[in-house]
Image (cartoon, rainbow, N blue to C red):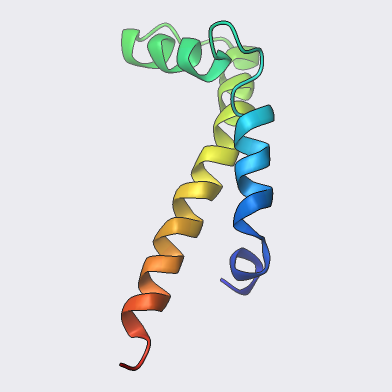
Length: 76
């Protein structure tokens, strides 16, 4: 968890805006999510692409969750 605490939220947002959305018309991650829910995400290159473009979003969710837990545990 210390690694996640050391990554700045701004840096994660930058990665989400660049790697997470590129190419931008339409966002590539959206195409991969459609393939996932349609059941056509089966080729290894598509799975790798989905993981690569989805990783910044997963880190963002983990960071926001961690920030919420730390804030909830803070003494009042």
